[in-house]
Length: 205
Image (cartoon, rainbow, N blue to C red; front, side, top):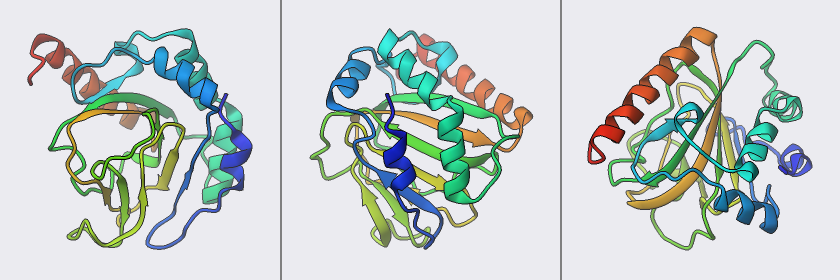
């Protein structure tokens, strides 16, 4: 389902940190099928796969994300060894205005990938920006519209600053991270599971 060759052919930027973006990594038909089978997420926040129900097309996408081929492509692109790094997969369906604040990702994350599953993104806000500095959202090296089928990725570092202008509404993506350790992944997943259960009890939390 995922066009591995397109990802492999994309050159990663080195400045201000290691990142790349590849559009159309899913065909129009596959994107439509995955969108139809996307989990029913009505609350903001990030949800582990274990807390979600989804259809067969989305399940096939997850299989591709877990594939050795994709791991090998990312490892070669960033010049790192991912063989001992566990893979964590989470999903977002809705954004709220406080999302998108500038950050680098936690040190527990080694490589971050965001596969967007929206329609064509023609909105001004909500576009991912790869930033040169932490104090200016307008000083960006790249701006990536979260249109369906776009994959954005970066090698986490102390200066991997990124964020987006505030946006509230549907903003779908699968986030997958190669984590620094199994323990770090379990801590992150436990936090997301706890947050997901709180949202089930109180959708406005």
